[in-house]
Amino acid sequence: QAFKLSLWDKAILFPIILFLVSSVNAVSFRSQLMSYLFTGVLFYIISLYDKKPNHLLWAIPLFLIWANFHGGFILGLALFIGYLGIRKVIEIRNNFDLRSLFKLIRFELIVLIGIFLATLVNPFGYGVYLETFNHFGNPWLKYVAEWAPFYNLSRQWWNLIIFLNLYFVGVLILFLTGRLKEKLPIALLILLFIALSFYERRYAWSMYYISFPILLALSDFFKPNSKSNQITFALVISIISLVFIINAKSPLEKYLTMNWQEYCLSSANPCSYNAIEFISKNNLSSNLSSPYSWGGWMIWNFPNIKPSIDGRMVVWEDERGYSAFAQYYTNVQDWESIDKSNYDVVLVLKQKPMY
Image 1 (cartoon, rainbow, N blue to C red):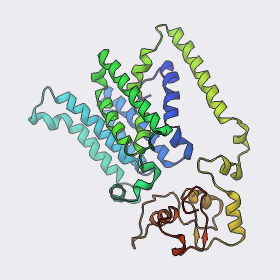
Image 2: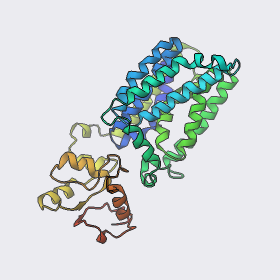
Image 3: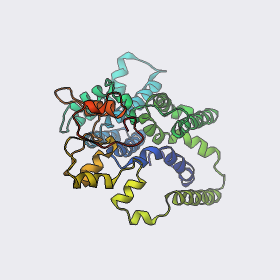
Image 4: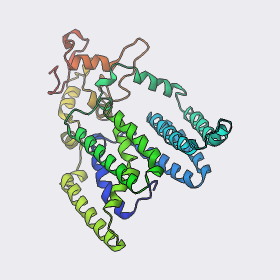
């Protein structure tokens, strides 16, 4: 809706985008994914702002909701400021007048202040910002997969390289067709996020979702002239895409007969229902060291067992400076012997050095 995609555009671009973001979608349904939905809503609001500036006020309630869902609202705030900032610079660069500068950006500043105040309406107040700053300075963050770069020559790394090439081809087409100027704010913003994605993979997911304006140039380049041909080819491409998807997800019956044992076998982070059941039946849950990726699953299925760590804000520390992740990671990587810890029972994945 934000980028006004035709049926042809959807048929060409949706499979590409869904493939690029498949890695993060495959892990689980998390609040992080809601941030990508809100990113789409943000750019829809910006597209309405193009027609009528007052529509930008809708960004205030959006960020009120967003701040109460996920810390990714701060990334959304950066996208909002970055996009409008670049756009305003382009608008005033030819007729710059310091005396009228405030007047030119007054409305946007009012909206930005409104957004900032709205984000403070949450159970933690300004603490949501402090937590973000703590994250950036935390030495353990580099060991969390989402905050680490893609592994060189991995599939996700090649996806980023391929996307980089698609981006430059799209920008070139926009330049040659005289449309780059109108797309320049989003083009520069995406270029910044490409650079950031080589350092932290988390930036890549939002970048892929907002890349439609650039990839649209590629879609338009291959678009048939005839409207009927566009519809015909779009339907054929969509059917082919669906066949590949259904084949990858087959047999579909497993989704109708899913249970926790099946989930553990098919999960992106495989778990063992039988192992936890064994621990529960034999009362081995006291002073238990458990895998990081199993925490939430254990809490849901075995509330009588307390995991040593789960997926909530892994770099948090308590008032004594204790970090569950720091202890877990030094043990599981075998940097420090588990024998020196206070744990009595250890549940460890076979692929970990500690095993």
